[in-house]
Length: 273
Length: 259
Image (tube, helix red, strand yellow):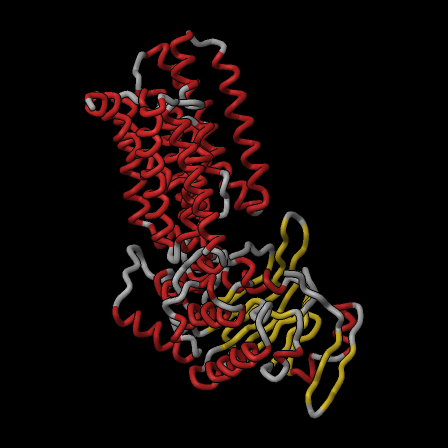
C-alpha cells in the first residue's frame, strides 16, 4: 500500500493521466486525418531531438532542454510529414515518414556516439521508457504540452474535424484549411513527444494507435472518439500499473499489452454482437 | 446578366497544362453542365473559379470579384459539393453537423451556431427530404443520402452560385432524379446559378440549359442542341454519337470515370 504513495508512483499516475490526454489528441487526430501511423512514427523522431538536447545539456546543464528539443523535433517532423502529405496526397504518408525518420535517426546515430553513458540512458528513455521513472522535470514539460494541446483542441475542435472530414469541401466553403491542417500535424507531433517520454516511442503503437482504433469501432460521433480514446488509454494505464506491480513486470510494456488486449476484446465483441 | 466571366484562362500544374486559353461567360440564373474526358480540366476549372488554384494566365471575374485576389470573399458567396471520394466517409460526423459546416466555415472563429442556424438546417433538410436523417451519422447513409447531405451543406448559406463536382457518382437513379428536381427548383425559385461537372451527361440532359464540352480548351459552349454534336464530342473524346429519341438528346461517348 505504501508503494502507492511513493513519489515515483504519484509521478507515474500523473503521467498516466497526461498520457491519456496526449494519446487522445495524437491518436484520435492521426486516425481522423487518415495518417494512422504518424503518431507512432513521428515520436521516433523525438529521439534525434533528445540526442541534440543531451548534447546541449552537456554544455549548459539545463535538464528540460532534452524534453524541449525532443518535442521540437517531433513537431517539426510532423509538420514536414504534413507538408509532403498535402503536396502529394495521403498515399505519400509512408514516404513522408521515411524522410523524417531518416533525418532524425541519422541525427541520433551521429550524436549518441559523442555522449556520456548517463546522457545516452536519458536519450534512450525516449525509445523504451518506464513510466515509473518519470521525473518531476519531465512532468512539468508533459503537463504544459498536454494543457496547451487540450486548449488548442477544444478551441479549434470544429476546424480540426472539418479538415479531417472534408479538406477540399471545407476549403471551398471558405475555411483557411492550411492553417488548421498544419495545426493538426503540430498537435500530433507535440502530444506524441509527451507520450514518447511517458511510454517510450516503441510502445506508442499500443497507446496511441490502438485506443483510437478501438474508439472508432465504438463511436457514433467525433467527440466520442476523443472521449473513448482517453478512457481506454487511462484504463490501460491504470490496469497496466496494477498488473505490473502484482506480477512484477515492466510497467510500460504491461500498459501496452493491456491496451492491445482491450483492442482485441473490442474487435471480438463487435464481431459477436 | 453574366455572373462569371472567364477570359483566356490558362492553368498549369508543374508545367503540365490543365486548362488552356479558356474563355466563356455564365449568365444568371442558369444551369450549366460541364463535360469532358478524364483529365480534361473540369475540376480545375471549378477550383479556378473559386480561386483555389493559381492561374498562369487570363482573367476570372465572379460576381464582380477577382477570385485570385478575393478568394475568401468569392467562396463565401458560393456553395460547392466536392467529389464524394474526397470526403472521409468513415468519420462518424452527425448529419446536422455536416450541414451546419456550410455556415460555420463561412463565419469567423469561434464559429458559434445559433438556434436560427439549427432551424435553417432543418428547413434545408426538409426541402431535400432528409430531415429524418439529421441525427444519424454520415457514414450510416446511402450514396444518394450522402449526396443530399452535401447538397444541404452547400445550400445552407444560400449561395448565389452552386458548383457540383460529379454529384451523381455512386448515387442511385431515384436519388439522381430527386436531386435534379431540387436543382431545378433552386434555379427557378432562388435564381441560383448552377455549374455541374459530370463525365456522363445523359442523366442530367433534361436539367441542362447550357452545355460546355472541354478538353483542356473549351470545345463547345451553348444551348444543348448547339453544343452537343458529334463534331464537338469527337474533338473532346476522340469520337461519339448523338442519338435523338422521344424528343430527348443522348450522347454515346464511351467515357468511363473511375472512383
